[in-house]
Image 1 (cartoon, rainbow, N blue to C red):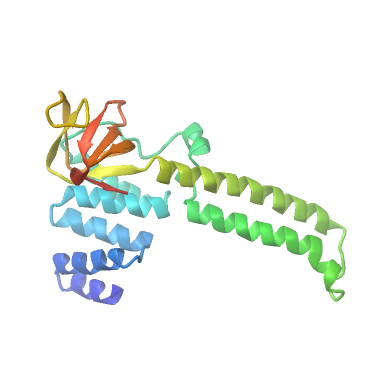
Image 2: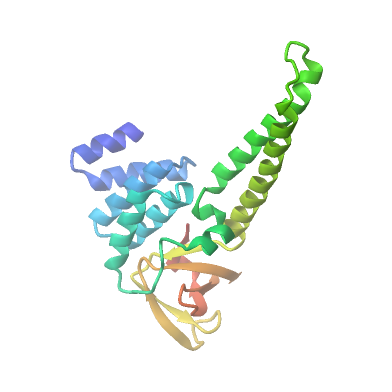
Length: 227
């Protein structure tokens, strides 16, 4: 199906390529490259909200990809809501949010690799006489195990940040933020297509959200899609 999408792109059929990529997404397939291409296609056909969503999904898997960051910045320049959403966090933000540097899957893979490396260096020579014990093995093994623990902690924190405090993108052209989860409550402000926000809570079909400038309110879930 990926080849079918590439063929559709070469034929100048962006909508057909979008249909193929979205079907792959529904089937559970995910890759940074696919979401990057999907974001570019959506922007080409004028769907800015879906473009932001696709680029954000690409960054969740490849947080430092320069081309995706650049394309997302271009899309955001054209959005109606010009709220600061810095794409390049400072050192403190990177330390507190490790998924900015490495995706949670990469962190988990690295932690698992280092765990097996450390255990292998410690125990393999004891059970397999063909592997002689070297003086450097214990030191490297414990270093690998220590780094593995740090990466597991970072992966767990990245999982918490993305699953327990998920982000979403506004897909409706315009939607109001309310003070409470009901339509008759006071309107805080209006937000528009392509705006990224954090989800704090959910009551029924309503989501409590926070914008990057600190504004909070309640939005109907049908107007958002989680990243």
